Length: 415
Image (cartoon, rainbow, N blue to C red; front, side):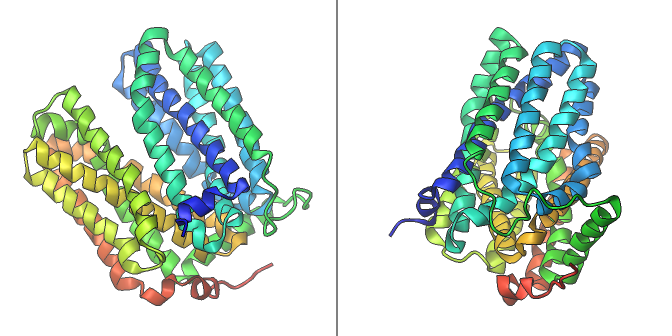
């Protein structure tokens, strides 16, 4: 019998989405490397690089909830096509004006704003393209392709930027968005999504839709607990991920070459985890599978804080990659199968806002803590936070609340 991943990829509509997202991820990898290198070359300032990263986060916080209401009102494939074409224009602006810092900052903000609309639309669209039993396989395919692409292409991106500058990398990214948009044209709007000819909503109606999305999370025990769990996990992961290079230099005493191996170990684990999960597990709506990966990640953070062995760190980070990826795929699958289609965009957007808000706080606080007390304290505190996240989920969400019928019945229609 074919695996859920193979069954998902056998669907022509999902295959189009898969290749659209995978190809645009290839371009993203080249652009991400080029952007930070370009900013540093223009300014020589680490602060300028940090500002660029912040400008990519701010649109999620500013427009995320609004984007979710738009995703739930209009055909999702059309929103994704519009975002892709807009991001292609942003890439062209970087090719033509990338020697001006103001253009780079504006492009970082604009590209992230468009991505804020694209991501919840893509996550909301997946269940409409495959059978219910194959949602896990579809998410596994998308995640593993993204991770493998990043691991495989990041060195090539660095080489291209070193040899030819940032322009060709941005051009490749723009071309990938055009290809993605062309592939998405073949997707028919799913039946549960309102027609593009639906009446425009006024500001008051849009605000009511946002409130409805927030209320749906508040009324559901599963969704409310998941929001808390996401916030705690982001408070941990923001600092521990951003400061891994500091751990490598100050605690493990390794240089850039071995640091690259540590990142590679995470990538290998993250790429393999979902592939193994979808072959071994038929039903992921179980608390142990949803919240257990947080406990695994907390244990890894404690190991990293306690050990100075490079080999131990390498194995721990590969395990971290497995835990992160399987947890993400399970989380996506549970939400996609549990949340009603008409609310899905708003729920995914809300979790993006929660994650990015807590991540910003974590990065800032982690940097201060690392300088004041030491990098090990960052990882110990990170472990405490992510262990608390996993424990909260296991205690607060009974197995029955992960069943889609029960979660869906907790919503009250307001239309």
